[in-house]
Length: 96
Length: 230
Ligand SMILES: Cc1cc2nc3c(=O)[nH]c(=O)nc-3n(C[C@H](O)[C@H](O)[C@H](O)COP(=O)(O)OP(=O)(O)OC[C@H]3O[C@@H](n4cnc5c(N)ncnc54)[C@H](O)[C@@H]3O)c2cc1C
Ligand SMILES: [Zn+2]
Image 1 (tube, rainbow over the protein chains, first blue to last red):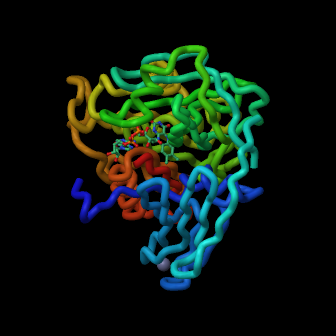
Image 2 (cartoon, protein in one colour):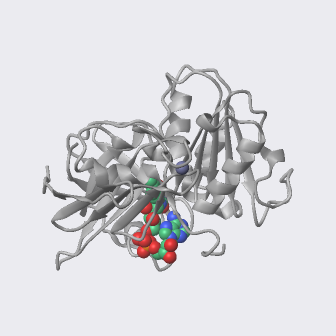
């Protein structure tokens, strides 16, 4: 498959792990209406592009950026939408 | 959400030349739903960490979880998990993860599962849960594989075929008695839409192709749930 015309992406399902560190409920079933193309989608249905450790989730209809998440050893950065600034969360280091 | 838990490898079974079933013991595992996955974290001696997602292959069973790992040539994590992690060694897992790509027996109506290669793993958890349930709604598994050597859970699928509709779709090499020539999934392979809930899992290109076929065959977009493995 041609990488250019068909870049590899994942489903928003894949965000359950990274975002699970900062949400108390599963964020991937959260619902969103795309402000650009009006397509409704749950986070699990967004298209997620790498490469790690930075993930960009885009609207499956029009590719507008819904969120970005970057995981670093000590921090997780979360940006909602594009150009809106990112929140930096300190990552908990829980091991049970 | 809970953090990382220690998981001890207790058993490794060959499914294909490069596909393995791994069973881990995780103390106080909270249970999970068919279709959910875990993130697996490996830590090297120098502190370097790598995280990858792997689907749960079986319905919840006390402290045991079953994963299915396809060794990707040149991959950083999958060949190690598939063949090098010693039995009794530990990794860390986080989960269960994901509330969207799940099916439970309470879900009424027909079920259509479409797997490409190792995409069978989470669909196997759904199929096993469906077989263990009282549901008599139609259930179909379409399993696309390159050839007969690439079939995971072969014996189990043969016996499951007495209770559900299971078809193997060979893409490169079909056995002589196959009723269908080798080739990728087409709309002719799909059962009638019938308002089925559809779960599609496998490599990104496969999921893309099958989702388009399902939409073309009249399946409602909100009834199609996908998991792209990359
Ligand atoms: C939600 C989710 C569930 C998953 N469940 C499973 C599962 O049950 N079983 C399983 O084996 N994998 C599963 N995967 C894929 C898995 O997380 C890894 O991506 C895969 O094991 C490759 O990791 P790696 O470190 O070996 O390869 P990497 O070092 O990350 O990549 C090496 C090369 O292989 C390519 N590549 C990456 N993934 C794949 C792939 N799946 N097939 C072919 N080429 C690939 C990459 O583009 C890269 O060029 C799942 C992925 C997601 C997002
Ligand atoms: Zn959009």
